[in-house]
Image 1 (cartoon, rainbow, N blue to C red):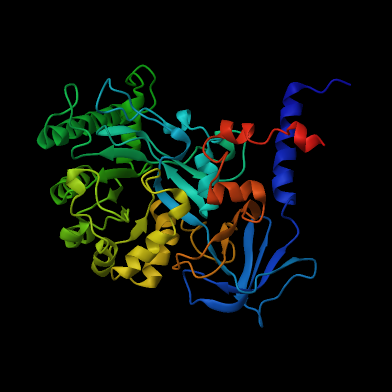
Image 2 (image 1 turned 120 degrees about the vertical axis):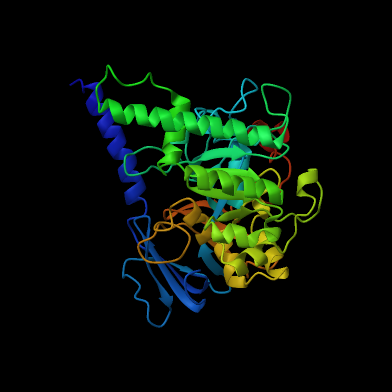
Length: 439
């Protein structure tokens, strides 16, 4: 009997769903672990249970019920904490706008990401479970970002996080400062940069008004404009603006634009945030910061300081960390929290900066960022305290499925490096059997 194509698609889809759901139908319980919940006090000798891709229970070993059919893992001497959320990454060699214009909001970085790139494997080895992949910062608006879960997958759609309407979630990348100042058609000054952005958002406001006036009449609707359509999404708060900015005056320019147009904003990098923390706090705008282990780079970032996190925390600003990979290798993301604490940020704030703060910035705080029943079972198993440089990520789990295991030689390669860890092709060519192996 020949099965109709539509039915085959449905069967394949249901099979894939069933594999993901049933693959973790049996509860998994980790016992005798040190648990960092982020939202509550640390739990020593704790028990952590996950099932069907969700966290089922978390608490002291003496009072947490373990299902009778659970698969048990003894986590004595190990630490379990939520999976890390990197709010600004460039893994997968994604690219956005080109040289034709400084403003290209219609471009989707999703269309250019190679999920089989080795950087994805290294990110899992670093304990990162969720990323905001961005286009570059060489444009005033370089395109749409995409939020991904670092699941094992064969195509980008296997990793995307969808909203209630089923559309991949993501924001809009903007930038100012020196990166976007170039020869025409790019702006040559900071003032012209802001003027071009204002001009485009005003056009988006007018485009939105024309659509509203048409009231669904196809003859009255304006011609579809993908660039303005994207900016309208930003104006309506449906797409968060992730804004690259460094210098204190550039930061204030972004806050001025946000006040003028009302888009939902996250400030990224903000090297000089410690100079204008009160202004950022007054605007109720969160920050995603990077802490480097050595100075250098661009002149506008010369005053970057490890105390950024501490100053922003004291001012009451929601503060997350990011790698900007390849600026910081994703495998080294966790040590950012240690830098921040060393410079005065609280331990609790630094751990939140790796997890729940990032989840909140991506509007996924109800699903990610803490060990709480009902949230996605995205977590990492560590060899010790996350603030120690001697601690390793032993395992990374996403939705109850293990995606990295340091004890597996293939995964360990991505964690520690070595021959074959640089590119997927090198890795594929490194392990052909030789005549000696056959003897």
